[in-house]
Image (cartoon, rainbow, N blue to C red; front, side, top):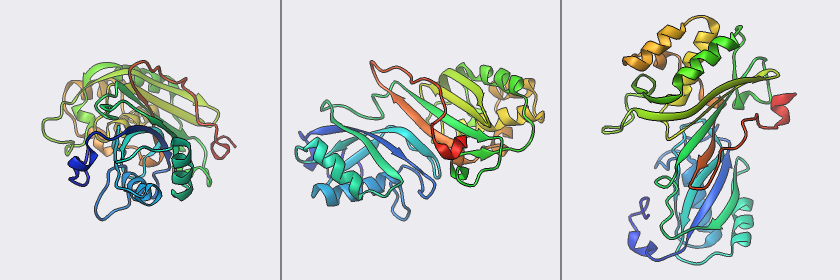
Length: 274
């Protein structure tokens, strides 16, 4: 609270709100606010100042990277006054760029924290088997033949509690544990799309894109299942070479106490299914 502006005193004992946000991250530097770059968080805060006519603090559940999208990012909002939720939501969305949309704005408990209270997160990655003009920013186009059975075997390896040091960027931060619980890692084909979905406790920086990348390399026949098993046992630099592009990655859902995972299905977007 007050993390962005050093104004903690101004936000004590004020209402807190929960936001569900979707965005196209193509033209943004990522979620996290930065002084010299256009971010999702920064855009939301700047717009809030104009619309709500007051200072605002917005903290997200996850820091998506540059070019990564969200279907259901969660954030908490603090402002020094009570909001009329319906009016604030409509006016805020009217002022936001078309590539950011607030799906829900609701009152939250005074101590609700979007990141600290999250019980799990799921990511969706979309790979296209055919070239696309309209959906290019939302998929990774791979023209090579891919063996689905091999990729399914690889995805099964990732389930459970593992040390994912091989799949995390070296700059992930000191003191951050590489141990992650993956509840579900599934790949399936839907027409010309191949969908990868990971659900777990949390994810390390670039981890999902590298899991997808090595799985695709196994599908191409360039890596074996044993190769990837070895990456889970001993730290390897190989996954970094096969990091999948950010275009196909979506923060799908953030799970809180009492929530359940959504059904695994592709977004119903005409530009992806045509």
